[in-house]
Length: 216
Length: 216
DNA sequence: GTCTATAAAGCGATAGAC
DNA sequence: GTCTATCGCTTTATAGAC
Image (cartoon, rainbow over all chains, first blue to last red; front, side, top):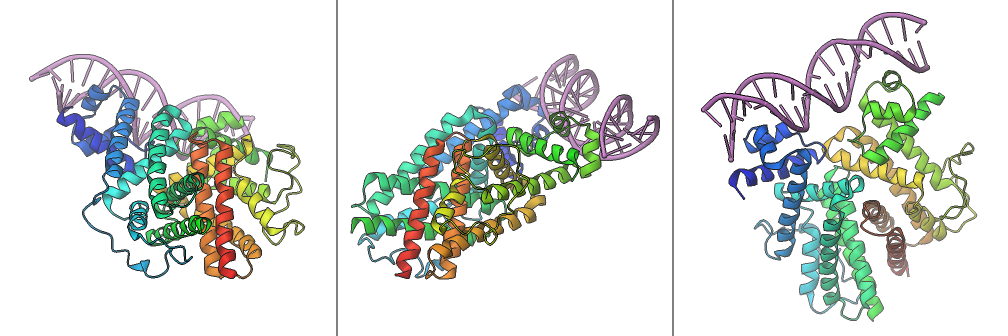
């Protein structure tokens, strides 16, 4: 892929995060990517073509992001409010805290007010919302979503080894769906990011407590 | 409210559900409601005015749903005779049903594959998503959302009288946020409606279990 | 491949008659 | 209150030079 082409797609990701899929104007994108509108049409045929390629591009990037279990942006989030309030209260606390921490980390990753996180989050939300009206990307979303649920389920299973598989999967599905709902609320400014984070952390505690108590 | 005015708002709900907030064209709405575009501007001033009133209209209609009687799955006649709208709200609603059942019903009502429910759900999701990029309607959404959380919290408190208020509120926020996340997944065809329903029911059980165990 | 310039269409909003 | 007609800006998409 040529440099220009990639520059346009990266610009599209930024514009989509800023204005939404249906808010994307080809002329805005031209300014963002510092090219002419004609070049965009040369590379992507029409506006729909831009969208198709941009959403695939974003999807790829998100896969890489989620798959990389290392540092997301280099900065480890402090999470000062963690304190005592989280999980482990129900006595069935696992002896191995590592999976638990990794679970919290992966689910709280979404709630950071950093440009790149916001961009991916917003773009994903847009992708999902857009699919309601145009099912073209549904298959891709389903696949990505299933992988995401499975990843969370594996960590949950590691935290609560005695819990039945079906219960773990259901918990993972609830947690990921909750994440999406909270993310939407945060991004639309309906709740502050710390609050969304607290609620997410609380849900992890509740789900783990339930899985643990079943095991005990 | 005049007949025309209501017809326009009903049309707006349909168009928003079909094409999204940003897909709503005033001319489309005119066709849908069988009026001229000028009449729409006469009644609602501008496009944003349409959106604002449509949001209030949809919110009202959802409230009526909440208060209405009948089994999820369709005991009620659609469309007509909403006249004696039991203006919902926890205080005004029938006290005959036990809180746990009412809680389940209110949270599961969203997951019915009926045109009007789908319409309401889609429109709400759209408005929320739209607010990410255009905060114009944020205040209205915040107010409606807070009322919704409070309603759920009140029912939760009735089920678990001994639970501390903060825990109840947090649970209500998680349940409503989860509902939104699941609703989005359902509407975009990522999960079947029965599955969304099962997950929602499971979450209610988990949250109540947690609140109850704290009380015990 | 990339640009400038412009055609063509879409869309929000208003004027004025009835 | 409701319509028809239209204005003016925005946005998509193409033509043609380099």
